[in-house]
Length: 172
Image (cartoon, rainbow, N blue to C red; front, side):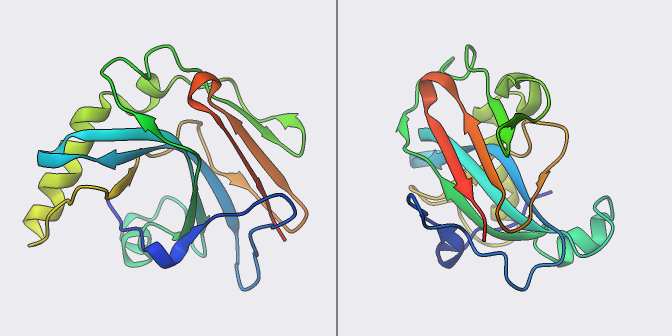
């Protein structure tokens, strides 16, 4: 499924600046890889990314998910670095929820396949809708772990991407 990200939904929390959960029904954090588009549907940069979701129906209900923009309510991005083929091959992402391991470490290629093919797919999909993928647009890869980290006020999610960086999000 493909949804869209709005700049207004990008959170840039710093220490002591949690992401608010006010008004959510079933909030979660999806640990993903953020891919910044380059020219001609290539990848320019890559970094840690967490999609903020609010599932207010059946998580597996595709029509409901599409109607709700794939449950998206925002995103948080870590620092990006220049892309090179094979960059994600040796990355292992470790996720913690409230200082406890959340699932097994995830290898992005195992979860998302070829990231360059993913960007081409996103470009083709938006093209079918009469839009175009523009340089600088961000594509979130999809879940690296089997499920979202379900959150509530006071929770903290940490995703350590090894040499790609670390992303920590607190919720209020």
